[in-house]
Length: 219
Image 1 (cartoon, helix red, strand yellow):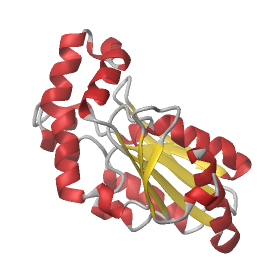
Image 2 (spheres, one colour; image 1 turned 90 degrees about the vertical axis):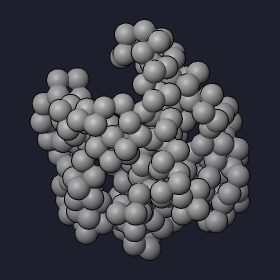
Image 3 (cartoon, one colour; image 1 turned 30 degrees about the vertical axis):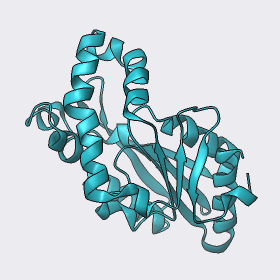
Image 4 (cartoon, helix red, strand yellow; image 1 turned 120 degrees about the horizontal axis):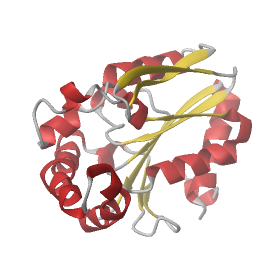
């Protein structure tokens, strides 16, 4: 099945009933979340409003206070209060929402506003989106998963320029990001609360392993 189109078709059918629909594309680092979310948004055409957890980072001094730890990644990295404000505003029907609060490259506050039509679908990608304080807002929750070795393999390609070299990438993933995802799974159970779970080991051909909303009949 075409997972992106299936999600988009499901969201579009919901818009016909309730005007505003919120879709979360959750999953670990390098699982293909952005690729899938972009595909969903493209299939929705003019209905989609895009957002990403990457635009809701907290300042570096806050992110790094507890060092390379799982707890720092899960709890200190993102401004979840601001994410919740976005979700509340979007669901409430407002015509303008904040889809970003920080420029990660400069570590400076950068508030980005986006106009929202009356009928719209928020398509948001990111890690940790199915946390307890956020999950009640989502109309559709998608959780992507890949084995840890696949995450690390992709990260060594994607993040080398960000962190400087392969050794630093591997250190950060083994000490912080992979343990942070393990802590997220044990604390928040994203597999258990998601509407759809998909294995994206082959990002071009996701395999749906759980589907409570009947996407198989849509994609």
